Image (cartoon, rainbow, N blue to C red; front, side, top):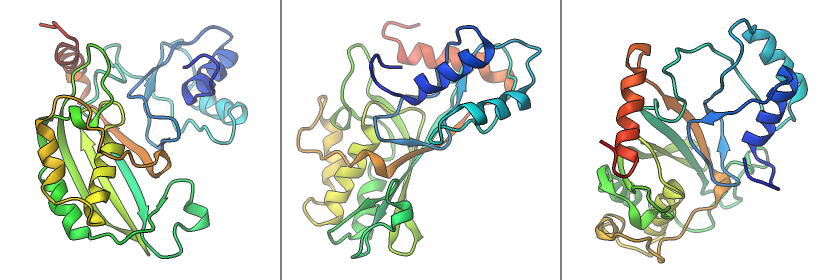
Amino acid sequence: MQPGRRTVCGVLTEALSTVLREPVSLTVAGRTDAGVHAAGQVAHADLPAELDAQWLVRRLARLLPPDVRVRAVTPVPAAFDARFSALRRHYRYRVATAPHGAEPLRARDTLSWPHPLDLAAVVAASDRLLGEHDFAAFCKRREGATTVRALQQLSWASADDGVVEAAVSADAFCHSMVRSLVGALLDVGRGRRAVAWPAELLTRRERASDVPVAPAHGLTLVAVDYPPAAELAARAHATRRLRVPGGS
């Protein structure tokens, strides 16, 4: 939630509080930049145990605006934490390379790319970024937050006619990381940068001003993975220990 701005979290919190007639606080799997979509966001809240989950889904469907949907409500163990229990997040970035740009029905979630795109070069540059690195060059730093991330997938494939799609997965992402990675790789694909350039930036410890940030609307959070119920508490503890400065 952000004061004075309409956000998904704010809209959903207001709807839940209206339905339940009491204040509700949400914890989400991850924040998304303004304009980024989330088809697979996960959030948790403390709700009455006797609440009928299917009733709540139907009630929210009538109350929420058309651009926000709750697909399911599921009881979870007390140890579940939507943010800290997560194992990894999965994003997709869609790029229309056809001369006519993005199809009208997909224009909201697809970037129209008006330049040539050497996909083989993009894939080669992407492979060099996989693994655990300090991605400070690709992140907007937040005070006290680490920029070390384990990038588990960064692959490109043809999604449909004239569209290529990047699949990006990591244990977590720092602010603007995915859009910066895509922006750098698109520069490689149009021939402005060498294949080795994005990986060379991993030696930097501050945001690289020469890395372009891809537009927000092409990016979608599509899924968040969690461990089995018995491992939720341990995962949350380990994540907090790794992410909190001075944690033990």
